[in-house]
Length: 259
Image (cartoon, rainbow, N blue to C red; front, top):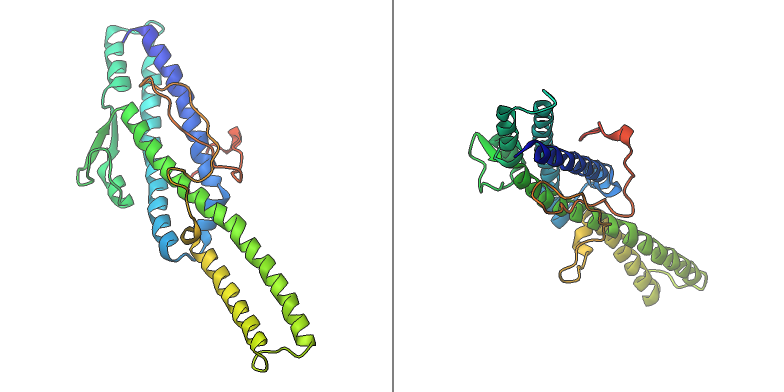
């Protein structure tokens, strides 16, 4: 790469880095993720959230490695106004070669596969473009799970509560005319429906994904944003976290997991 190519690549990386960080912070602040983190989950949702939480941890580890490589390239370029041949060789390796090292224990702890197909190695080498592709997949799957759970929680409990309120008024009217459980079949039916609604609400809260029916080939709703072209010449499909996400501001970019 010559000096102009390096400068263009660094400019693209800077914009891409900004977009990735903003997307990760939006995912971190998403209302659905916070609910999942604090809920007592069961069934499908419990299993999916365990994998998604591990994916988010791995995403931050990959992003930190990506950031280190980007800053290293910036430092080399800043050494002198007119980069030497040695600097350009080093920058070409950083920007186009497999220059990013991620500890094998990172993926092993997350219990997730990597592009290299396993996690037994002490470390894994990625090019910047390959690492972005890996982050894209992890991010899309994590966002899909979080937004899906949030969509169910936003809709079903409120609808069940409306039904329960209507049922309560019906029971009160029934009691006023002597229709009570144990004394009249209709009273027993009303009592049974009350128990069904109570149980249904509990199951929706603990396992929302069990109640999500997805149209074939359609992900959970999320607003799409695109980064500028990456160093690979492709666009990285980073997305915001849907209608209930908290907007990211520059002052919030130091936030990480657990904050």
